[in-house]
Length: 253
Image (cartoon, rainbow, N blue to C red; front, side, top):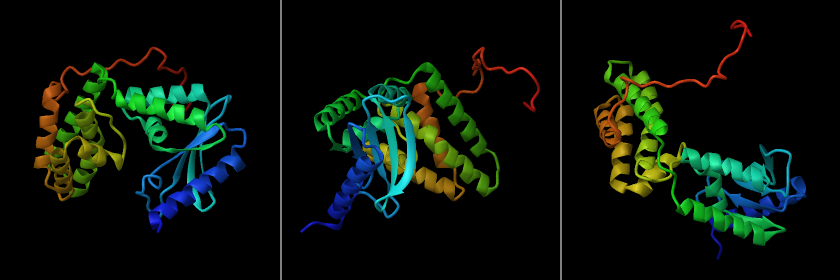
C-alpha cells in the first residue's frame, strides 16, 4: 500500500512533467527537487524545477502555481547553469548542485539529465573551496560586531534581533571552517546537525536561550568558534571599494 508521502511525491512528479510540457516545451529535460521529493514536504512546500534548454539568451527564475503546486523554476542552458553553480560553489552554498544531485529527472533527454546529476554529485563530494582570507575575515568581523552588541544592556527585542542576525555568519564559520558546505535559512540547523550532533545541540540551545534574553552561552560559543580562525576582529579591519564604485552628481540622482 502506498503511503500518503508516496502519493504526494507521485503527484509532484506528475505536476512537474505537465509543467515541463506546457510551459517549457522546447526544454531538453528538467530535474525535479525540493522537500516534497525528499519526503519532508509540508502543506506549503513547493516544487523546485531546474529546467535545461539547449541554448538561451539568458537564464531566469520564475515562480507560479500550477497543477495544485507552487513551483519555483530555474531555467538554464548548460553554460548559464555552470556560471550559477560556480557562484554557489565560491560562496560555499551549493543550492543548484543540491537540487541537481538529489532530484528526479523528467523530460526527453534522460541520459543527459542523469549525466548532469552524476557530475553534480561528484562536485558536491569534493567539498567546498577553503575560505579565502577575505571571506574568513568578513565572517570574523561580522561575528565580533554582533557579539559585542549582545554584551551591551539592551531591550529584549533588540537582543533577539541581534541573535537572529548572528545565526547565519556563525553557522557559516562552523561549517566552512571545518571544510563543509553551508546553506541558508532552515538548512543551517540541519547542516550543523549533520556535521556534529553535539555541536548542533549546543548551537540550538544557545540561540534558544538568547531568544529568552540569556546571551552568555551564545557569546561563549561564538568566541570559541572564532579562536581557530584568529579570534575576534575589529582593530585593523580594512576593505577597499573597487575604483568603479563612484557616481557623479548629487545624492538625489
